[in-house]
Amino acid sequence: MLTIYTMNITPGDSNLSEKAMSLLNTDNTVVIVIGVENSKKHIQPPISIKVGDSVRISDLQIHNAQAAFARQINDGGYTSATVAAIQTLQNSGEDQQQNGNN
Image (cartoon, rainbow, N blue to C red; front, side, top):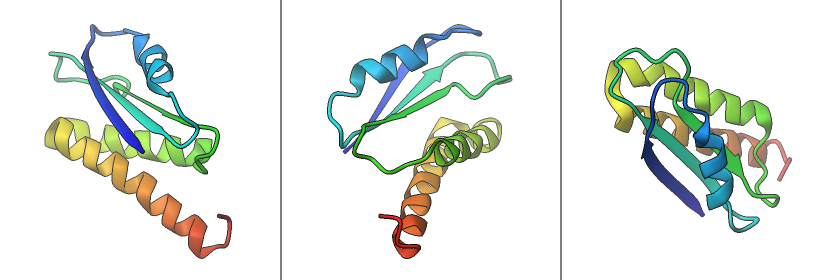
């Protein structure tokens, strides 16, 4: 199951990770929390991704999804950035299945 949640934040807000953890209610859940701020420049990507214990997504794959989000956020906005993050997670899951790591 994939849960996507958006919340208003101020620059430097660290509540994204806490909110993501509060939404992580089953072992089969992937939670993406996106912080929306009015600033056009994003020093750090306003995104937190948490996965349940049964989800086979590594820290590196999460980092890659966050990086994909960060690449898209300034050019294409929140929607295209979210899609890029989801596609990165989906592609990494497909790679695991092809490599027999599932």
